[in-house]
Image (cartoon, rainbow, N blue to C red):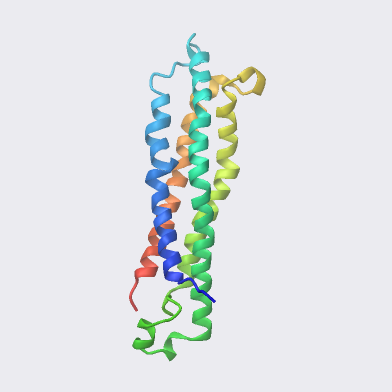
Length: 196
């Protein structure tokens, strides 16, 4: 039977977590893409507001699909990768306590995960990704739907006078999706590379 080293899984998952932040929708969309769409956005009383809101709605599927296609698999990988590493760390500690091992055994662990790893750190990393997925579904998706509905506000029933508010609210809520992968990846990487 082929076994996968928990350290390898944890490091690969941490690398994906760190990649999600700068390359995914977190930084590029929150600090570049969406603010660019809001430059000189007219107030609701302006005659050009309806066209600007419609333009924001027409651009939104691009932002949503890029973030959704890239972000969702990485967060899912984070949940399972950190879950696996935490599971292995928990059970390896249960069956062979640290006090019964010598330093030679710790350095040459066949499981790939030394027995001094704390499963709780991996559990926190996993929880960060789980929180991100739930936050995206519960808080971000309704705003995505409103922004997407700006393409045809009469058909969708979206209040186009709130177009800029929706976009700025999306930027603010997206900050959680920026910080959680960084926290998760940093904790897991620190725990994996920690010496006995």
